[in-house]
Structures are given as structure tokens and as C-alpha cells.
Length: 273
Length: 264
Image 1 (tube, each protein chain N blue to C red):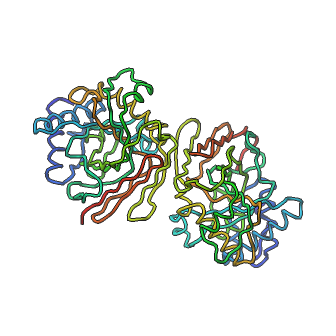
Image 2: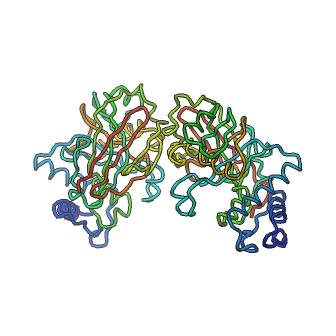
């Protein structure tokens, strides 16, 4: 069992391997902080970056970044003042209309997001919401399918960051728009699960405005000597709470001006943990 | 429940408005009112307000969203009646002492040009009958300690009606996408909640249709939606508690904004 895969404090490479193995074998495990109790946030990002290098080494292509914890209420609970960051590769793209490949997911949840495609490279420090938005070429609605490698989504912030912020898959919406003239504060998403409207939110739920989230992300990456490249896809963080996507379920996210994204829950193929 | 008990419950609730003290429960002698009893209790209060010279100015559709319904184990909305004293202009200080446990949330206010008399009212009828839409803030309140335990208790307590602050800039129905319009609620300048119009029964218009069909089922007075009536549809976002000194604003895309100022 994956549980037997040991992690030693300070072994970044091993921690990254173990998390990627949990993902490959579609098996949930306990938090790595159980074996590495003093894993701090900075080192967790090193684990995350090491896992990215291993993904690239096995042939995946880096296509962008995803932001997490963009709700101020969640940040206060977690004791941070900026979104968490993680990497997107081409292996995480789910084409529109394709049911969830449940054989590759442990316990998928869906959350609607505002998605940016960058026209220009963005690197902190000094990035503001205005300069961040000026670098965005196109705005989409999207649905991120998050999936944690940790049993029952139980983890500390450092665990989650090491696990690429519960990355899974994402689906891009049908309508791309120039940010010029868009009211992203009021761009709303109505979330429908099996025909029932269960939640809704607007871009204001994302760090006050999705461009604020993008600016904070660019500044955090800049402090690590990294940048958001031209052409990158940026998932700006869940607008609503994530919802479970059960086999056979249908989840739809209806955006004010960015169209509708529909996710088919797919067919159960194995007992998930 | 026998008529005597219903009247007694209505008397207790009216007493709560006067004293500012919530009653412990709607339950009387270990009996929980069923929904029809609850609407009888609501009607009895309304009769007494009418006798005191208050007039019905419209309706509120309570529990219009799935989360709100689930919280009270309900499967449909609850109708409440708005009288003249409940309707307030924006930016004028509101006295929180008029309320017991006020909470504020964004709402859409339909103002009717034509009557809508159910049963059988559909969306097309409702669209034809609407004169204009106003942005609104709904102040919900409860005359029951700790709030209603279920939908019937809420119905008995006039669907938790407290007050309505109406914005002053009307929009016409075709100008706004009431289903997908984004709505942001600010409390003292901070984003407190966000949502979309469709939280209310898939579209606020569906809530208007529901009210038109539900009103006649609950008898007179206030058995139909008449010309000039307001129909308030809250549930677009979660509510925030209203404290003395707070300033609460909502902005609704395509509809406008409205601000409530709570006096210290």
C-alpha cells in the first residue's frame, strides 16, 4: 500500500515521488506532515516544484498556474495573506464534453472559476490588479476538478501545497472574451448539480476581484524568481465551495457572460477510498 | 390547531413586535402548527394590522433558494406580507431597535403594473404584469427566539418579514438578465457575500410566478398580487447580521445598487 511508502524529513525528492505515485495509482494516503511534521510552506513549495520537474521529465508540458485559497475568509483561517499557487500541465486538461475519467481520480470535486489566458509575461514584484489585467488576453469561465491525494481531503496547508494544491483536471468554457469592458466583480456563476441550483458567486469572491488574485500570484512567484509566461492559463481560484461529483452526476456552471460549462460525472469503475 | 390556539399564537407574535422580545416558540401545548395553521396565524396578525390601519403593499418570497430551504428542511418557498411600515427609503438611518434579530440580504423587488391572480399564472403572464424592477435590501427578522425551527414556524411569523430598503432607480425587465446577474453584498465596505439572481428558484421571475400562484391559496386579505404591489425576492446571497452603525450595500449587475444605513 501507498501508506508503506516512507517519507523522511528533509527529503524533498522522495516526498514528491510519493505524492506522484499516489496520483498514478489513484490511491489516497495520509498527510505527509504525519512523517515530516516540521514541513514548512517554503519547503512545501520546493516539494511541489520537484514534482513539477518529475512531471515534465515524464513528458508533460507546463501550461500555466492555478491559484487556491482566494477567498479572504479561507486565508484568514489558514493564516496566509495571499493565494496558494500550483502548476498546470497539459495532462490536466479535460476537453469539453468528455465525462470525468474516474479511473484516474480519487475523489473529484468541482469548482467554477474565472480563467485567464495571458497575452504578456507577468512577473512580480510590483504587479497591481490593473497591470495584471492589462497582461490578460482572454477571459474564460471554467470548472476545475480538484482531487486530493490525501484521504478525505484532510491535510495542512503545507500538505496541500506539496500536493500541487489538489490539482486534478480543468475544463475551459465556451466563450472567451477580452477583459476590456468586462465587469469581473459582478461576473456571476450559478452552480447546478443534477438540475438543482445549489450555489452561486461572483468574481468578487475571488480575492475581491480575480485581477487582484492574479497580481498577488505574480508577486509571490516573482519573489521565488518565477513568472507567469505569455500564453499561460491561469485558474484564479474557486468562486463557490467545491461540490462532490458523483458517478452519473451532472454539474453545470452557468456564467453571466462566459457561457455554460457542463461536467458529466462519468461511470463508477472502482471503489474509491 | 384549534382557532383559539391560533389566535393566541398570533397575539403572542404581535406582542413580540411591541415589546421587542422574541417569544420562546410557536409550539403551543406541545403542538407544532402545520403549514396551513401557520398561514392562519400569519393571516390573523395581518387582520389585526389591517384593523389598525396598515395596508398591504406586497409580498415577500422567503426560502427561495435551495440552501435556505435545506436549512429549514423545506421543499418550497414561504410567502410573507409586506405592509406600508416595513418599506424604507435608502440612505435614511434605520433604527435597529425596531428589529429583534435583524439580518440583511440583497433582493430584487418587482413592482406590478397589472394584477397577477393565480392559480395558473405562468412566466409569460408575470413578465407582462411587471412594471419595473428595483434593487432592494431585505431585512429579515424573527419574533421567535433563536429563529424559526422549521418552515411552518417561519410562515406563522410572516415569513420573517422585517423591512425592505428600496433602491430608487427602476429598470425594465428586458434590460436585465435576472437569472445570471451577479450580486455583491458589502458590509461596511467589505465583500460579505456574492451570488446570482438564479439562486431564487432558478430565476427571480420563477419566484414571482410562485408568489402569484401561492397567494390565493392562503386566503384574504392579501390573496392576490394587485397593481402597484411589490414582490420582494431575496435569497440571492447569504444574509449578514445587521449591527447598529453598519452600512450595508448591494450591487446587482444590470439592476443597480442600494444602501441601508443602520443608526447607532
